[in-house]
Image 1 (spheres, rainbow, N blue to C red):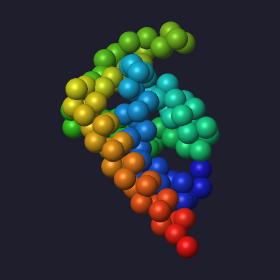
Image 2 (cartoon, rainbow, N blue to C red):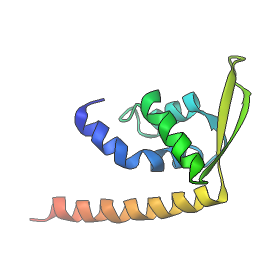
Image 3 (cartoon, helix red, strand yellow):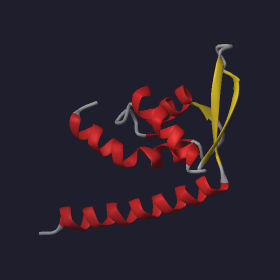
Length: 110
């Protein structure tokens, strides 16, 4: 991932994680893969960015976590959205829609 993408990802990582978990709980590697899938490979989140964000979001009350077993029979921490996390997803998505609309207007202006 390039430098420009890294900066953009830092500002959007929470939203991408929340969106990834909207359909159900997942472990870290699953979240990373889902983000890559949702963005068609544009964002590839490394563990050094993902796990601090997950811990911060758990501390904020947006995620709950529990230990389970992955499909590879390994111990894995699974994350799920809380009610507060769903509200945060809605709020952040609405803010992004405003930003995208404003940027689109600016870029299409003659």
